[in-house]
Length: 577
Image (tube, one colour):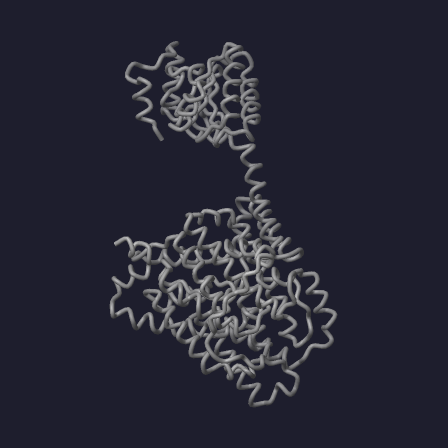
């Protein structure tokens, strides 16, 4: 029973129905067909020979069949991860060189190692540091760089790789007069064809159709002799077991890149898996098991010459739409890839690079996120700044710099926001026991001798001064009429040591002025901290109330003793939240 709990394969296998086999078979064939041009294209983005893209389309998804908790996720090479591989390793080795390939394979092992460790120690929460605006800005920026890096192949001109948009634009303009007409024509037609078929029906393998038609065109019309750049020979056969080069210095050099890819790859996979899971009630995706599945996929894959792999949104969506019921569809997809490696690689000899560029550009366009900027413009300017800043740094400075800048900016913005959280003065809604923000509700009753304040955040070292200043500011507006200060603790969820000192200072400040200070609706953890710090003795239990209305009633009755029906023990039990 315990074994089944930890091995997802045994769970879905026990439930497997023979009627599902047809769905899994045809879904798997479809994904395998999609992965062939994707594997070749994404390997080119990664700066690797095409064969390594097919290896990466084969091994990691075989491992995922047994360890993955999503039943429709399609694992393999991905455009954004491929770009990160190229940009990260290019600083250490020449793109396409033997040393570059060695580093890419070692990188896959290290990415997998980090993912397995994160999964075993249940550290899937780390991906939460990649906020939606950061992901959106980084993804769109990466898509622009991916697309621009293919302009050279699309137009048949020499354009050096770069991770900076301004450099790519400059290089394209310098070579613009040398555009090869046939290559440009083939590339543009492939873009129109792939995009048109995708729009018509996403389940149709548009990229494969473009590949087959272009190969036939080049072969029949001898277009390679007219200057159209073709892919050339791809080695045939399945990948062999070869250990990565475990060199301590190399591993140290790429450890930061591996950590970045481990988190980004997991973020892509889990977001896709959760999206698909919401359409099904038969299973649940486990984030930490997903980390382990991806991790072992990359580690085992590196033994067979793969580079880092993750889930792909488009192919996972197609897998789901094609009716896949279990990860068995991935097994059928892997069989398609394996057969292609054994028998079909010679067929790709005449594949034009312009067509691959067109396929990549269409895929990159699909990564562009237009909806989020429009959406958050209406309600959150701070997130829009984060998104656009991440985008600009990614396209003008670099890929790794973009994601790092986005994370840091998000954290800085978050910290800044918590230093000045929402704080409201409350008034009584007539005829009720409800108290609401006087700035948002009309005609609320505000007593000149009572100040009721709600602080909507945890109170900690970064915002204690703001809290004290606002209380004194609100109190000064009452001038000498103020007799009672009620701090509504309904939204106060935590206190640190700085908060304890701040509350003690506030208590002493208002008490010296003859103003009674009481609390209402304090949560259990907050009360516990007050008791442990001994501050409750100064505040007094009888100055802590279940509700604002109780505090107000007690003040009006000129009695600051808790009603007998509310002993502190009973109060604690009733509001231990």
